[in-house]
Image (cartoon, rainbow, N blue to C red; front, side, top):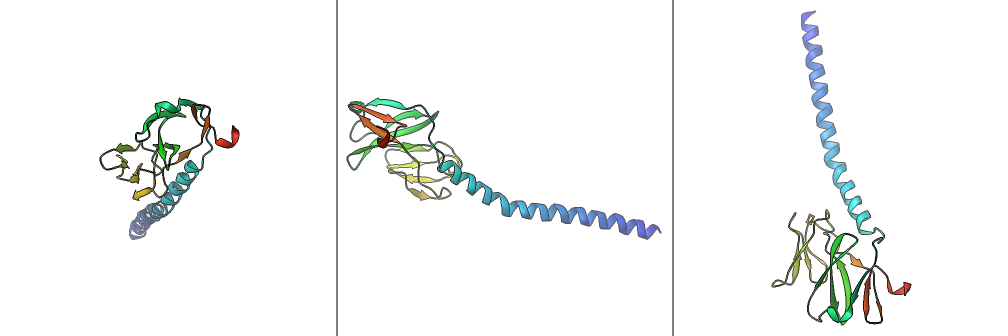
Length: 151
Ligand code: FES
């Protein structure tokens, strides 16, 4: 009788341990999947911020102008002779990337991700390029948050 109680207690401990081990293993498999899915959802999120209007003349041909769009920093710059707007929100987990002018690339301070000057991924963990923002030109103004088709 005493041995039977001891065995039951041991079985319960084993069951609890196995339950925790199986749960942790499943979490280790499922969490990266959901983080990746959230990553993609964030990337394809519709722009909702109020448009930001900038005078074209304030943007130099070589420089990068920092603006805030939808509460997040972004860069405006010329690429192939055309102005572009690019979010500075890392496509991994949303930290704000830093422009390293001397290296001509963006570096993420959180997990070491890096992006080229045009936002392409240079090193993991991000898998997606920095997000381009809708941009239109109206007269002598650049309008971030409004695509050219809406003009
Ligand atoms: S948030 Fe940028 S590398 Fe993780």
